[in-house]
Image (cartoon, rainbow, N blue to C red; front, side):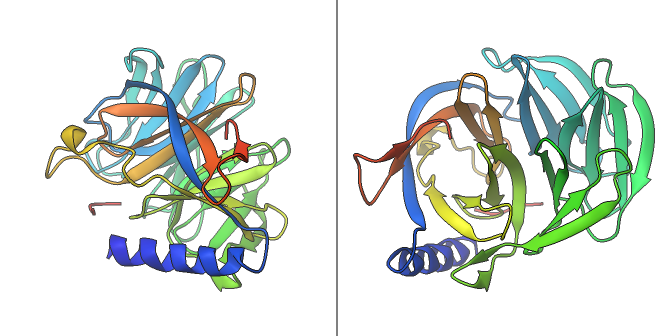
Length: 268
């Protein structure tokens, strides 16, 4: 299933690139860092020198503050066992998190990770990111929701499309230099999305990023997790139960001299 999705998206992207400005990228690894191979990564962001990561699966979901260089969790809280943890984002002094199918989100103190409140939403919760004015949420459909950061109520939506076709399974999100970067669940692709229209303007192919020798059958899962260090223009990616976090540099696969710096299967 994952292979078919990847091929279909690549065919769409390449066909569209012939007529428009959708760019196809591969990547160069700038550096690799340790990553907890038991962290089923759902959400990821970089803030003030640290990574913040949320993990999924019922009875195993958590939120943690992670030291990039070592992969060590400096702070960690467990999500109540009945919930499947999903995406996270920071806003002001808060860290906001989603759950998959419980229609329930949590608000934590960013510094202490102590629970401050809850909120509700319809549909599934998959991922969160933000620009300077809004929180952006994915729910597994082609649509991205915009949320008011103070009330967490929905203020609008866009539909993610590639060559006019809706793209489902839009997963982990990251705001990168005015665009939304998004994993597509069960693929090795990251999409660059225009936040005004929802149109895909670039497709990043990360096939082969994790070496076969680093894959543990029955444990290592799909690519998921994007974080951007805006101050130092560094882009990080990882996956569910991956042993490594990668800093990557994007290369235009159709024109190697053009570049953009910075920026299997299982349970959801």
